[in-house]
Image (cartoon, rainbow over all chains, first blue to last red):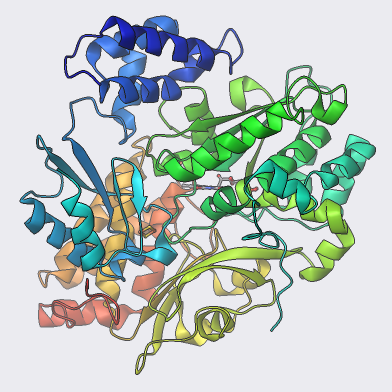
Length: 163
Length: 441
Ligand SMILES: Cc1cc2nc3c(=O)[nH]c(=O)nc-3n(C[C@H](O)[C@H](O)[C@H](O)COP(=O)(O)O)c2cc1C
Ligand code: FES
């Protein structure tokens, strides 16, 4: 993943190859349907939905860039700004709260020196939706990797790996 | 209590999440059987089985399929709802992780019955691992000639694609899911028309939950009558539930339609009871949108019809237990906050009402509440969706109901706790509102 906002030729090649495969999953007159998978691919390549990337995706899907923005801003997993290196999504919904999630979030805030909801260079700590881990609570995801049945010990070990 | 296992019957067997392992345990034999039957006969079997949807509404599956118009020349679609995001619910994810081919075989059976040649599986974006397992299974089944130009050698093309969401609870609502599959933000559509008539790309589309469809192979393996008999008059089979919150052994369990809430919480093979000295105060029985029950109501069977007299619902099978040391105001605040965050913003009562109720609850919880706040809370909830009974919502989709029912049921059934907060200007539970397991350790 290159840090620059502009595409490298390799990145563009990868994006275009992925897009043409994705478009094969939909009727020919419904290219716009590929928007979510397309933005996911863009984000995998660039780390976030860059303006240039969204323009490119919109063109390939034969729609307007506004349509790409509409989707990128509606879904919380899409980043329209460069996120911190580690996006940590913590479930604080009822089942998790009943198993210590509020305390876990505080612990994370103190340990990471950040506040939930603020994006930083290294960490973007957020409260999130129920993550379908209610019977294995509490839980969080680090860059989409799921961790459940969390304890202080487990959390501290995981945090050590985030360099 | 002996529960005959259906959906989970092969979980944990060696290689079950691979095609080879799945076949070793009888996999894709049910599809062969179904393909011997005419599509109408497959539909008749599903009707006979009394299978009901496991996504939340418990809608009879065969009946839903029969709404697809026979004379519409447009293509038909099957869309699988793997968006699993109702708080308290964690079951579909384990089907994808443990037995992905059971879903794929079910999809093939359903598509044959429906005459659908394309199936999209809409999985929530946070399912990185379950989606990877599923992608692998789809690739295996396609390479083996199960899917593709010829369904198991028949002259019937079937293509199955997984589409991953990107973090939006609303996309579990079937019409929002269709919008999302069309590459848009998840704004639910006004019904009718129902998806079976006009769904994806304006074509007839059946939307079914993962568990619903993953149940089909067992039905065709052992027979619709066997399946119907396992259950009750109106609800065939068994079902998956997720037990969470305060109890000794939370987890995902397959239960019979006769299993009661009390059995689930206390039985050795399930929840194994409450921690020492604690008693049950409240139980949410069907995902956090289901009206809360008191300990006195725990005798109810985990079956779709049984919840009606209690004005609650079996929903998505997410069962959340709260003990006698949990603060009902704080619990409700968490629930309401979720629906406020997840409102898609399309309908005013929901968009404005959910955050308003969340603020009122926070105010009461923090000891700043006044008696009029409780009235306002109920008034806002009632104007989104009056209760009881369930189903009177004033919004385009049932997210409005989902957020309004908890408020009305909590306040009605635990009113004295709300009043105590207001009278004493504090939370009586102080900084320990979460019950026996509420500390992070
Ligand atoms: C706000 C809302 C969220 C929903 N979320 C889900 C979900 O995550 N998974 C699901 O299967 N059904 C969900 N549903 C129910 C679906 O709309 C639909 O009824 C279901 O997928 C149909 O499948 P079934 O007949 O097999 O149950 C939701 C409904 C609403 C109103
Ligand atoms: S409530 Fe946290 S995963 Fe469901």
